[in-house]
Length: 391
Image (cartoon, rainbow, N blue to C red; front, side, top):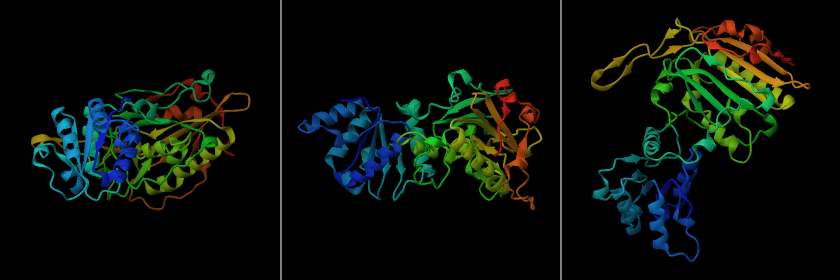
């Protein structure tokens, strides 16, 4: 029997539901076992015992039928004894008394909303106990040699505390003091563009990352700012089989989101995203860096964080006054070409901003990029790049 991370226990009537949970958990990097994987002719109880032994965590889907099932209760008993039980309440049912001391995720009627607080809490709790064995495969991060081993583009350095948070095709270099990214580094290959699947409805926390490393929905809701993606979902939606969908979902983590004026998110920034995708269809591989222009005089906004016993932390969030992006690729002679852009990001009540989608309006000489971002040190491979044509 193969090694796996999570065993899902369920009543037979909930098989389709269990399969949905397997897909969602596997998308986060856990390997999952369902009893349908028992080989034909194998002794049922023996195989279940082996699977329960191997599993690092056991998730029970509690329904009316599960509460009455001797098999589900035996599996839950074993998991409880081994301190690896995680309960999900899928129906308004009475969970057997002995299992009630384990807090259940209340997901009655849940349809897959990834931002649901009960789902988020479940993932965070599961991640604390069971490290996803396929996490590195689903989160390899930005490839600095994407243009070729002999054309490596070094990571821009930052002056301050930072953490690299790796995903599929991209990496967020997080600034914990600002709860935003210093920048996002990502790879684009629109010649391998694939099926992104349904667009996620909600942004969600990355449950593997401390909440303090990412903004929360309260920084956006009713603020007038858009929830702007730093790395575009469509630019990340490439690769084999399930890779486009996985990268696209990861783009909706709050680590990749920042407050943008609607005219930025829906016009200027969007125009350059569409331009970079067109460039990739011509040149193939791109390397892109983008992020907020972080300054000390950025506007303080919804900055209070409440802790234990009425503890308050102030000045925990500021809104950037501008954003930047640099796009790099190779010409026919394998010389590095690049183009840089800067986007003003005024207060949301600022009106009259031109909704221009002409990327030339946001273009700056790439050698001047360093002047805009004194807190980031760009390598010469970027600042000395040849000019990438706009058309």
